[in-house]
Length: 227
Image (cartoon, rainbow, N blue to C red; front, side):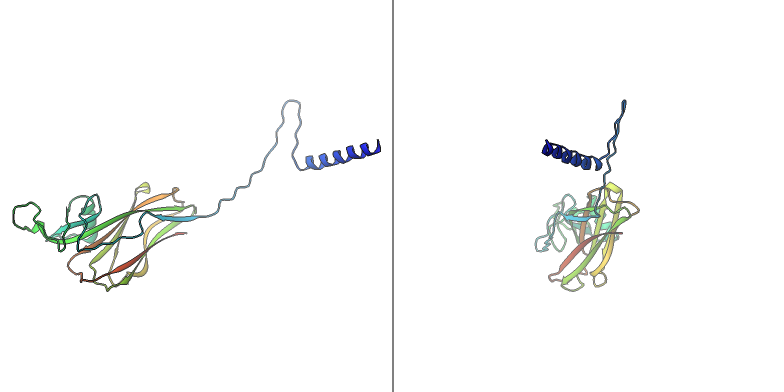
């Protein structure tokens, strides 16, 4: 009997300790208890690029189609590099698969000014970004020329994020900012990015007659940072 009493006492003590760690509410008509939840969300930034290489060989330029490939910038064109990129994307420039850019496009046996000129070549990819910093984030591009001199024509990059109504074009000046200088593509201030934000990146080389034969190589570094 004494052992049974001690066992019951020990059980009661254990139950008392267990109940002491919990909130207990007993009532005749209503009872309620409160649970406390602690949630920790770490700050994260992330990037994913759908393409990590572009090989452009003007021995056989890829014919332009659907925003990629090469297009004829006709003789006498007075627009800027950004204008030429937008005109190519809008389908206002003729697709071209020869370098130098000249071709009897209408098949009449002669070459008009509209059938010769310079060549602009485009490449597109999607850059997917994630940043949950409430103060905002910034996307920069660093272009570093690793092979060849500053005589490759003109180079520019168009960044478009239609989900937030954003568009920005940056020109890379040969020998000036193709040595790793940060170029701002996008900055979002005072708010986070909307989940995974997809940017359409259009890279463009315009061989405007200032280019020199040779092999050129570049590293494009996209960098996303919380502000």
